[in-house]
Length: 277
Image (cartoon, rainbow, N blue to C red; front, side):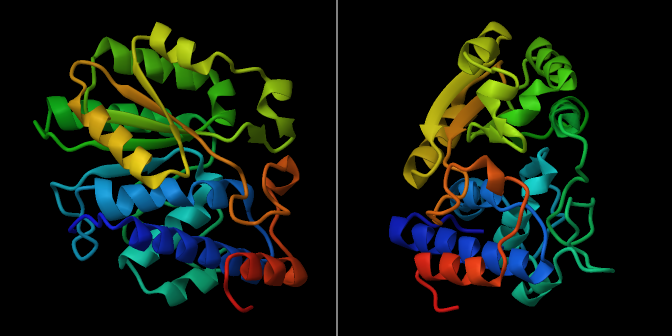
């Protein structure tokens, strides 16, 4: 897929993805709102500029891989895959419905473009590390593995076991993008389990660390480019995001971590995103 470099076009893609997230959630009557809206710009940067991929050949051997560890934000993954042409957008309206390919947490190969199952937090980190190791050492491939991880799942001990393994094996084909939105389902991350200084922790574990504004699409693209240039180390890009980005009454509020909007709230959200409900 040819990368899109026009920023206005990329921002329009991000808005379209946010609109479809709201529509999916209100049709489902359940699901997570804050994280998916907050990560729309990062997913736009990845799928429309950074990734080496082909929506018409989702299992193409030379593709870069995306592993979504924080599976509850899958509405942004599904909406982005549909926007990129992996499957028809009409599939989005089946989200969380019985027999749908699009469940509340992703299932491996349930639909084109979904590379992993997710549920228990932290497990995706181990999966991505293993995949990066296998691609480099067994498949002799230079393809990149992009791991999407949340800040809340840094609480999981399994995360740090995988982080140590990646550093030991100096995996340069692994880039973690951490959604640093400062909330989790029960409150602020710094109240539930303080993480700071998260940058110093990763540097102490011998990772290269970059920090970006997760809503600045050019900066996200530039950070991914820098990450590919780092040799003999995995990279962690800490993407500072606003949960619920684009919908004022959701922004920054942990109460929206795990709930969907009702019809009235969805109509207001869509108007804020510039769309007539």
